[in-house]
Length: 179
Image 1: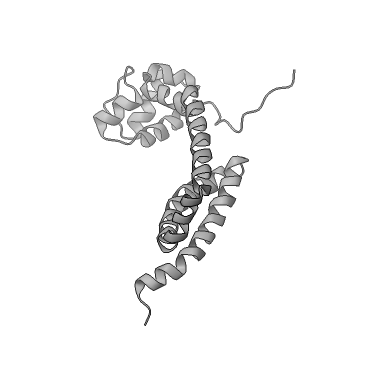
Image 2: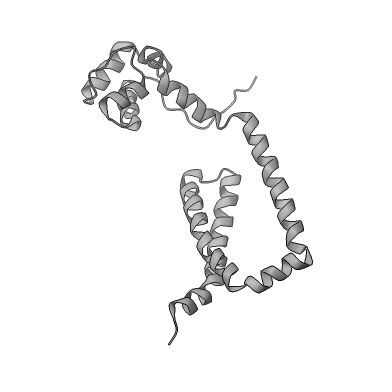
C-alpha cells in the first residue's frame, strides 16, 4: 500500500512541470502585456503553489542536488542568478515603483477639492455623490484616505462613489496623438 510520502514523491515532478508551464505561459503573457487582468493573479498564486512541488522535488532528489554543488555547477548558476536578481532589484529601486500606483496614492491623500477637478467634476457633485453612497460626514478638505479611516469604508467603495460624480470618461490604453 502506497503511503502519502510515496504519492507526494511520485507527483512532485509532474506537478512541478505542469505548474512551471502555467507559470511560463502566464509570465510571457504578462511580459508582452497580453491579458494582464487574466494572467496576473493566476501567475502570482500558482507560482507560489509551484514552490510546494519544487520543495518536494528537491527533497526527493537531494543527493543529486548535493552532487551539483560538489562539482561547482550549482554555484555558478546560483551566482549568475543572484547577480541578475540584484541588478533588477537595484534598477527597480531607483524608479520609485509603478507611476500609476504613485498617482493613485497621491489622489488618495489629496483633498476632495483637488480630486473633483481631476475627475472632471466639481466640489459639490463630489460631496453629493459621497453622501448619496452613504459615506458621511464628509468635508471638502477630506481625502479618500481620511474618509476611509474615519468611516471604516474601504477606499474602493469611496472611489466607486466618486466615479458617480465623474464627468471625465475612463481612460483607455495610453495613446499618443500624431504631430
